[in-house]
Image (tube, rainbow, N blue to C red; front, top):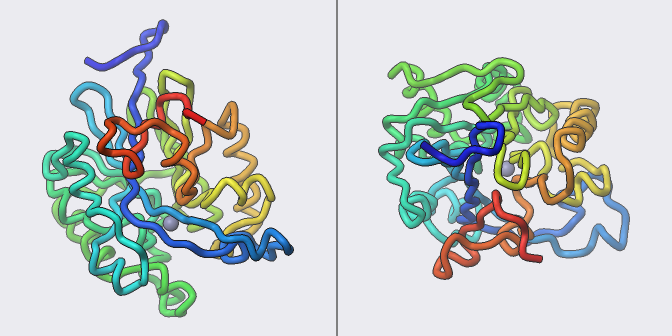
Length: 273
Ligand SMILES: [Zn+2]
């Protein structure tokens, strides 16, 4: 049995695990970004998220491998599977994995979770494998091995198609935000400090939402702006919005243990700065 609030509703812990990073510029992440903001450096993190309560564990996104990081020029910090073990989670025993979407930086390592149900929006699979995915600007974002692992999970009866907005558990909701990819989902989690929204790539960095300038990779600009409105409506403050790649997250929220500073952060606790 895990923590509950006064109403008897489940409260969850959230731990962000940062495994890689990349320094770019604001112009790379904010559509038609004006100077001088455009030329300012922008640190982008690659992370996965652990949501747990008692012995219940949900992993949100699954990261990627060191080999992939080297091939794509990302600075790899730690194997995300090792980070999970360092916070007490055996990937092989995880029962539920949520993939926010199928882009390469969110959907690797699936073979490390052989026992998990894989929750994926039903609109996400087709576009990743359809004819238009042969376009380099689309195929860039996918890895064939990751898609094949999703197919294997389906053959093993472990793929759980998600439709629309769905309640995964008491206090965990999957929110369909289709601007970035057709089946993209955010994960809304009830914590001791209120509802926290893991936006995935509906918001890459806080500046996307603050400046109202989308990351320049999307299926629909109109849906992307609608997603921004939904994110704002579902969150009581900017501190309750956890963008998919914002490097400030790991710096602002407390580490679960001193040895994990810079690698892990507790998002269910208030920020320290
Ligand atoms: Zn991403």
